[in-house]
Image: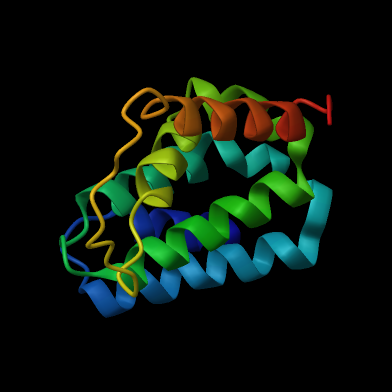
Length: 135
């Protein structure tokens, strides 16, 4: 079943709603089969990352579904996900989307320019430690 979903997800021309449904289904199946989803990750992760990046700019729902599916992969198969976290673009994608919250607008001027890049690095270190088993 997961092979069929990944094949459908990899085909271009699907509507955004159908793509979201496929992504949600892949995430749900990964939760059900837990550690056995590792063998599908080389095919699934790049496809999910691509859909998250290539989706419409105003489609927050697509990004949320992609991140939830990637989170499911990481929590169910952390060992199998290690190569994809840094080299596969999962960490970069998470950091990029972490700074974006459509429900929050900060009108305050940031007075502390010294720590502008420190927050991203802190998040990077925490995510790496958690995924790689160091934390």
